[in-house]
Length: 206
Image 1 (cartoon, rainbow, N blue to C red):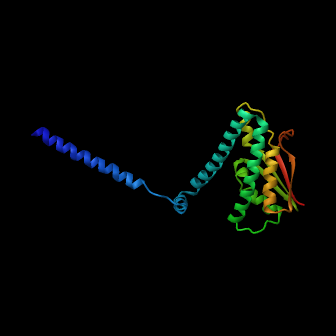
Image 2: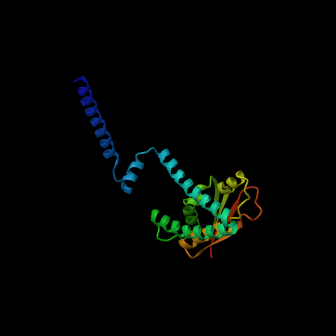
Image 3: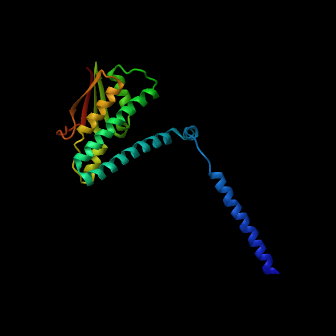
C-alpha cells in the first residue's frame, strides 16, 4: 500500500514538472517582428545600443574576411580580389541608396554631404581611426588605422593590395549619390604606405 501511494505521488509530481516544461516552451515560443526588435533595442542603454551596432559592423567584416581568405587559399589572391571588388561595388550602390533614404535626402550635391554619408557606411564605421577634410569643392578621406591590413599583418600575411577593391567601392558609392562626383586615389596598397595613414581618397565634382 505504501509503495502504491509513493508511485502515485511520484507520478503526480512528474506530471506537474512536465506541465511546467510545456508551459515554459509555450512562453518562449513566439514570433517577433522587426517593430518588436526595434522596441526591444530602444529599451537598452545607449551605450549598449552602440556596442550592438559596432558588433554587427564587425561581424559583417568578419564574414568578408573569412570568405576572402577561403577564396584566396583555394583560387589565389587575384581571383579573391576580383570577386571581392564586384561584391563591394554592388554593396556601395545599396549603401548609398539606403543612406539617402535614412537621412531623407533626394539629392546629394556637395562633397561635404557625400563625406558625411560615407562616414556612416559599414566600411568607414569599421575603421577605428580616420580623417576627413573639405576644402571648397574637394573632399579628402584618409584611413589612419586600417583594421583589415593590421589584422593580416598580425596573422603573418602580406599587405593586401586593396586599391582595386576600394576604388571600385568608393567610385560606385559616389556615382550612386550623383553622377557629378569623381574619386581619385592618392595612396592605397600596393602603393608605398605613407607614415601617417594607410590610404587617402579625394572626392570632387567633375
